Image 1: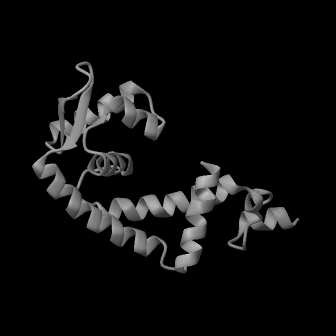
Image 2: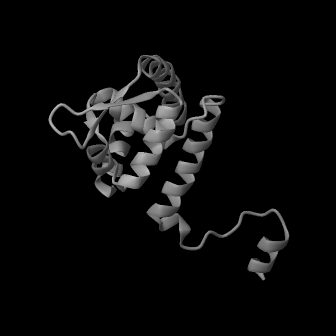
Length: 150
């Protein structure tokens, strides 16, 4: 009878085993984080993955596409597609790699570096919003725990 009532009115639903699942809570948190990221980046036309690529290239000028794929755990064709999009938008440049003629050294273009700095300020604000209910030690612990999973 209780199950029928929960389906027919606005009373609190039963969640079964979901509250005990790490994946369930990760997904719910990811939705909140993604929605805030999208609102923060309104008009920037940049996905979280593309921002991550820009951040890695900014921190590692000269990074090859192969190494970028290894760091992100994605295949070469996916990396090429992302870099193609960012290059078309004038954010990333491919240069000759100094020690491997077959590889491209990635770097942010001058406008890409400027744009990245602007977007990084937005992302820091976004991060502060999504973690506002966590103390600094809690935030550090959460990051450490998530790194142990991934």
